[in-house]
Image 1 (cartoon, rainbow, N blue to C red):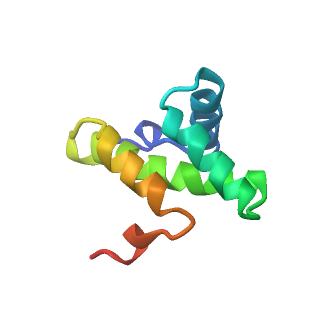
Image 2 (cartoon, helix red, strand yellow):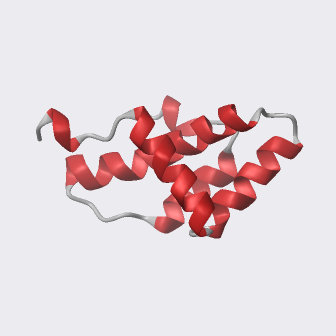
Length: 88
């Protein structure tokens, strides 16, 4: 794997913004609304969503996996907690 194969934080944020604009997956918009309604600033909420997205991107790039929408949705549901940070 080469460095150019890895998405940067800015690319992840752009992808989240595109998901919001496209309304696909809808869970991204629902998560953003939930986080903002509970007091998280929009920019911070977008960063959190990008973190959840990064798990899927990492699996696809590093492990040759496929994008797991179910796991992505579960990680979005967990926000603002980020339990994957504590996994071994």
